[in-house]
Length: 126
Image (cartoon, rainbow, N blue to C red; front, side):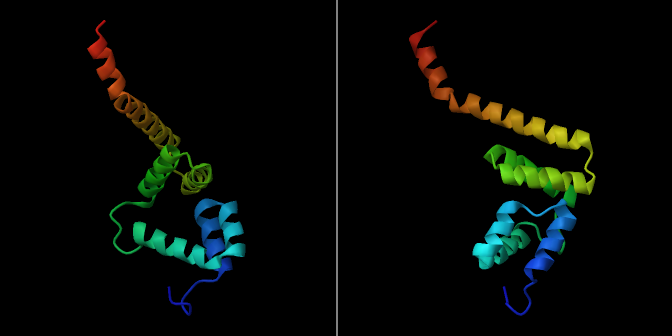
């Protein structure tokens, strides 16, 4: 990012408050120890979720981010996306369906991961 065009930390925090209702505590702490990483994080966000001609709407992006956070067990991101979903007024049913989809995906992962177990059981007979 060009340092002349960078928003201030207060501007970044104001945007986060508006979008998510609060600032993730990890981001606050990061800003005090390595502000450049905050700017890099913003650059990465802009790459992942472009403002110009986005393919997905904001609510879909939030639900995908929530799903990824749940699957990765990232409590800070789960909290942030739960707050963002609330701020965006995403319907309760959509949020719950997202959680259910992640739950099903994780259960499916366990079944897939257990394939060698099933192979061994088949080989040993009934």
